[in-house]
Image 1 (cartoon, rainbow, N blue to C red):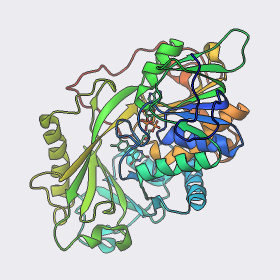
Image 2: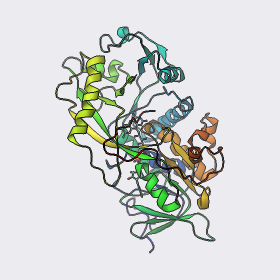
Image 3: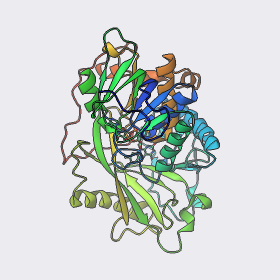
Image 4: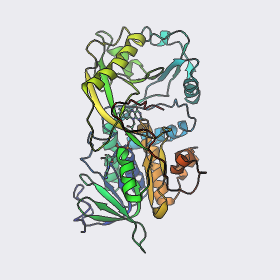
Length: 432
Ligand SMILES: Cc1cc2nc3c(=O)[nH]c(=O)nc-3n(C[C@H](O)[C@H](O)[C@H](O)COP(=O)(O)OP(=O)(O)OC[C@H]3O[C@@H](n4cnc5c(N)ncnc54)[C@H](O)[C@@H]3O)c2cc1C
């Protein structure tokens, strides 16, 4: 059955069934990829299974951290490219989604990843007692390091909406409530057919797959490729700031985004989206099936809250109220790979370079959305991601075939089993 039109939502390009690039999934990655491809002059169709800006995937909510501090040295160049693209997009949109802040890292001197992260993030040891007098209490043997320009808060849903709007302004057609169930290669035909659950078919010279926690299911069903991506259910927790300290913990007062490299790993953004509250989370989460989530039990909420409350009582005792637990929480999903590195690659096999995959963003991808979107769009249009390479991004770390230990290069089918068993009781760490 042919589609009525790819334009029901946008009201443009009525009747169009064929596109240069079809992007599947309108989270941050797909929205950025659609924008980047449309900015290159490609005709673009962005298909989303649910309503735009829904809360069922990974990209919704009030805030995400952007930080340069990464233990793996190949991420900071991608963060720097993303910062440039965030800034360009804000200039085009005429409003801001990124609030710059300093980034603070605290951790034991013996923790090698912590030391690597502060080195790679350009952070310098700093006396945080002087800087944020009395807010933090850091144990003996721990180091505190700050980068003045190394942090920031991204308004998540607002940022996704911004890239969707910019994509539409560049001519992209955006369709929500459209579930893709197939990507088909037809004998003797260039490109691919993208098939929806309503039986519609669109032709794409290229297709970009950015379906978040659904990636392993979709890719398995269309290509028989098993991606080792484990969806994880996670909670964002907001805590009440003790009376009199509300302003101290805001970006206007110079409060940082921060990471604490202990057990648990804890991270936070300054008080911004909900005045009087501060987001403080740990890295825990439970494996889930994105199509049959139980959304967590009261016992798992209580356990997550207690882990963070214990940290607050030890590290920020005078400033944040822990009695009664977090006052607001929001569920979200992360798509974890075994090494917590992204998958950014051609799908290969019968699809060759016609299908580009961006997946497994492992709970730390949002900040790099515009860079990933640019990479995916250039791979689709040019067959290579020149802008990223020029910016020093090393894409070999993100290949599909790394899971079999094959040398980097031609994509191959992977047969690795899911490394993390689906179990509702186990808890896994989601921060690299
Ligand atoms: C609690 C939490 C905190 C985080 N904190 C940070 C942080 O501080 N900094 C940071 O950088 N990152 C952070 N992340 C990670 C970041 O949010 C994700 O890496 C990023 O949002 C992934 O985006 P995505 O586009 O791949 O996935 P999604 O946003 O899930 O987008 C995928 C889209 O594809 C759609 N879709 C699925 N199947 C189909 C189909 N068959 N047809 C059509 N559409 C389909 C889905 O509905 C969805 O809208 C955090 C994540 C969580 C959950």
